[in-house]
Image 1 (cartoon, rainbow, N blue to C red):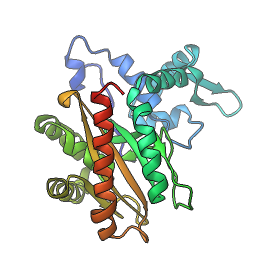
Image 2: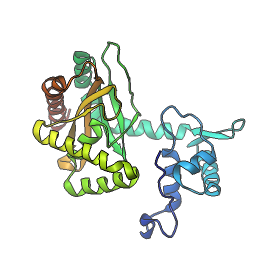
Image 3: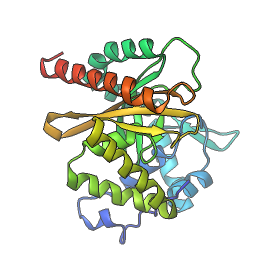
Image 4: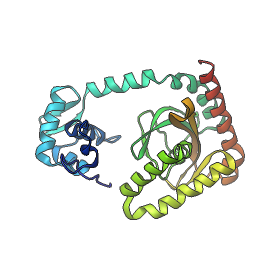
Length: 269
């Protein structure tokens, strides 16, 4: 895992802005450090993942525990996310009206193709699923709401990048380059291939780039004239999703799905 540079009160770029509150930023970074399937983390682990000094981490975890955003296990001397975080998450999802509009169309495609169909939004250099639908047959991987995927190697991440205005995309690419270090040239080449696919087909592909046994297509959902961008994908086991199936079947069906969702949004659901 690439460790982000620590937020220094005097040297961190955002902190040059007098309105930027470094302590708040550090607290939020601690909360982001909890990954899917990781229930408990200790101060040392949180410090390692965020680059925040351990004494500062200790003060932040104490404060976040008092506010209900973390729960402390005294036996393990570790923390897990608390009910305050869940409440914020549910409020966010409840306000995402696009989920309610998109889900029936997504479920229909998932059942017709026996694939995962998911709606995602960006979170730094990752994508987070805010809605996910599954087919009824056996699947190699089921990813649900809240799952986080790397932006650079997944179809949904690449599609999101394709949907951005050029200036914003360049800024995100710079962040990705810094996050991935020596791995970036190969990842950048994959993103550029996806941009070419998007220009050619109207959707992006990821054929074993993220997981060797997973292939997918994805397309951006450009909302509010580009003010907000999400993406929707359709994927499953590589052994049944050949390049031809992705390009000639799933991709066009996913484009049609995106058109349906955007049409419903424009007509107020």
